[in-house]
Length: 178
Image 1 (cartoon, rainbow, N blue to C red):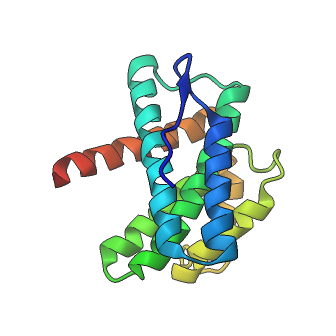
Image 2 (cartoon, rainbow, N blue to C red):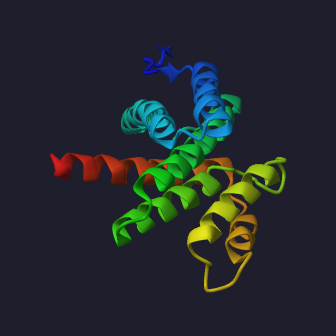
């Protein structure tokens, strides 16, 4: 189940990432609901992806908007969402930290949907928002989380910055756990 993601010309193979993530989602979420296997596989892809992105940005800065980075964000947003969904079922929200980590994952996944009004990502956004609201309502109101994301209408560069902030935080936490 663990695949080494390919990097060519200093860029992650987004097609390979999408294929592997889709296969794991189909096999272990859609078909069998084996949340443990889904989480392990998606987390493996996620860790490789955030290591790539963190290194890329540290060497080159936040990328400029183009087709590659738009595709990258689309795939990574889905990866973060499904990894977080699987993690939510594995951890069963035992602690406040578990809850906050899951909430943050959903927020980042939603913010990876750049220009959500322009692109037809409302189905995924609806799914993310529904998962978010199973745990918490933003400001105590149903539907407010989705409204806040649509109102924000992240541009590609904003979404890439949100992702970098998230990867930086995760790298810091990982480094200080060891």
